[in-house]
Amino acid sequence: MDNELTIKIAGEAGQGMQTVGGALCNVFKNAGFYIFAAQDYMSRIRGGNNFYQIRISDKPLHTLRQNSDIMVALDNKSVDIHRKSLSKNGVMVLDRKRFNITEEDSAFFDIPMYSIAKEVGGNEIFVNSVACGFLAEMTGVDFSYVDNVLRTAFADKKKDLIEKNRETAQAGYDFARNNFKRDTFKIKKGTAKDTLLMTASDAIGLGAIKAGCKFYSAYPMTPSTGLANLMAQYAKRFNMVVEQAEDEIAAINMIIGASFAGVRSMTGTSGGGFALMVEGLSLAGMTETPIVIYEGQRPGPATGFPTRTEQGDLDFLISAGHGEFARLIFSPGSIEEAFYLTIKAFNMAEKYQIPVLIMSDQHLIDSYRNIGMFDLDKIKVQRYILSKEESKGVKNYKRYQITESGISPRAIPSWIEDPVYADSDEHTEEGHITEDAGIRTMMVEKRFYKKMAGLSNEIEKPKAFDVEGADCILIGFGSTYGVLKETKESIADKKIGYIHLPQVWPFPSADMIELLKGAKNIIVVENNAGAQLARLLKRETGIQANRSILKFDGRPFNLDFLIQQIRQEI
Image (cartoon, rainbow, N blue to C red; front, side, top):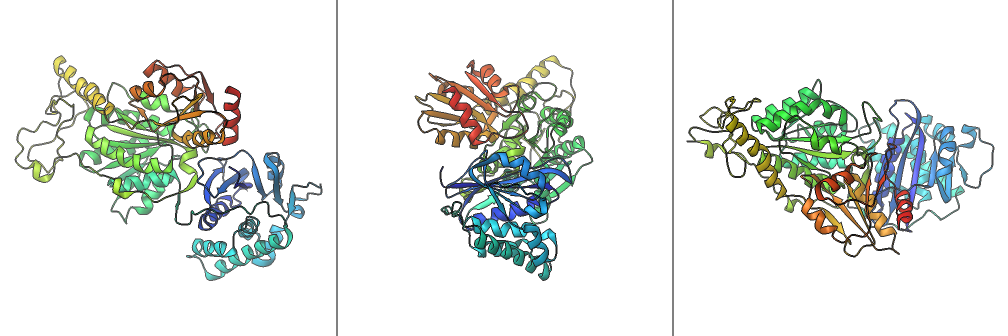
């Protein structure tokens, strides 16, 4: 893709990369560019080295690049760390005097950003607004877009603060216009003005709200906390209860209780928190209580890399819990999928009376991308419960009635005259504790075999692209979708196909066997060390991948890295 740029802003934690990065994303989006943006940040409040990377183009983007065309260094350390990742004709924007840099380098563009911030705004804190201004000019964006974004961003602040941000941004814009004479970075704009700029975390939250979620309980754990923040933000508007529990054990038990009472409920966590929820997961499986769990993966084990990304929990989520019971696991690969699959998660949880897990990871959760409007006409929210009207006159209610599908009529306490029993012990159809071997066998078949059979008939099918006759087929799940898509499009001289799995359990075995029939070269791409998807593919289909491309350094795949890896294989 020729008409594109990658911009990186780097500095210490606390220097405001998130502020300037977020503002620039909105500036570029409003100017018509398509965006893919992500943060790389350490698990610390001050110091270290963080950066915000923004890729822009006139066409939709789905992943990051390895090198930067414009690199803005907000501290001395960033110059040394990031200069090696400049593109061939890239520019390093820095403040020579501030950083005491005397060496000459043709890639350096010296701008006294800290002096401008102090002189125009009265405080060096406005250096981020200076950066917004000069980056807009360098990329050919009219200052009016910067002005509008700053006015919106600081709308609730004092007028004096708004004006200082605008004035320092204008000063940065003017400095670049008068001193930076290259038009290299003034690329063609797209038609993305009326798009939505959001993360997958936002999309999951909006999907949950649209699905009718009325209770969200969680304990904060990176990277899942963004969802809790969004749910709390909209709680009053959409009549939801959002509870910060004392721990993850309490969180999952709260949503089980709320669901028993008829409320659509959800929790969110990461790997370590999910480990604490596992007993509650089994409780939901035994009591056949529908719940939705959002698991945002990060590298483990233990605390691991709190702010980084990985896909290391696949095996864990499939097998978590003692005993055998049905579950469903979605692995959205895009912001759009995150929205629609969250709605489906609530519907399927209630239909089959099971726990449904939405598995994502830090990269997809926190990355910004602009997308088209959601198609609300394709959404169907279904409640699989006995209504108040249907509950009237029901006698001798059996909460766990044996049925051909394994799904029993689900009544809500107080809507029905008979009591509604739920028990974590093995139980009869009425919900009473039993030790009977025959009943035990029937209940396991009901909870496990029958429901898994039903789920297998409603699988979210793999998304396959150009696999027939392909020289090489790439396979991934979750956040690798974007990089697989762009890798396939970038290697135009070879016939490459790819398959994305939006659902990993029950595994779409029949579909994968059909799609991979006659495949010449199968490469599985995943962000973990154990080739978990490749092993799952072999276990469920008997198909052995020719190779796994694995990345487990806490960073996501980028387009250039994966192209290089694939080129070596074909």
